[in-house]
Amino acid sequence: MREKDKELLLLFILRTSMYTGEETKERIVPFLDGYEIGTENQCNFTLLLSKCLKDKYHYEYRALGWPYQIEQFAKKRRISWIAAFKRVSLELLNESHSGEFQQKFNDFIRKWTESRVENIKIPFGYGWVENWLGICDVKQDWFRKIWTKEELKLLTQLNNEIQTIKKECKERIKPTDRLLVYADNFVKHTRKNAT
Image 1 (spheres, one colour):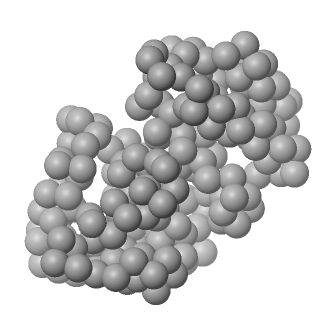
Image 2 (tube, rainbow, N blue to C red):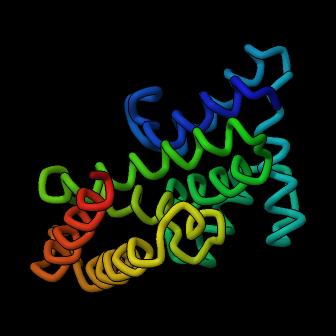
């Protein structure tokens, strides 16, 4: 996979709906198929994704392909297909890094996360939660390395509250007061450290 493929795929994962209109499995799979064909198979992202799911997580490749492997990963972790796709894809991109791409990767993840937390009230809903769960995996080493110890502590509080909201809300998902306090603490901390 070429460096420019990694950068485009990172942007695609973080802003999927900008490329596909809707964030659905039915739009993501053909987008990636088309992208790989357009690169004359120089980008082998889905092959690498399938290999990662087989080697690391032990989900065998079947006739239904890598989307089925993602589905199995999602079921085991009780997250959506979209969240699972983003989580595994980011892990894969992080593992196939060069020094320059690694810095871009970390910067994009940091900016995406900070932006989501700063604007937590505006688009908060099921899609926001699923995106968060797919991208902000506080248990993964690659994600943890991006943040200071204090930032990671604040993100973990946010993440735990988001998990609770997802479990407890059967109808409309909305931010809790506790989540808003955690978000405010994170924003204050990152702004203070930025100056």
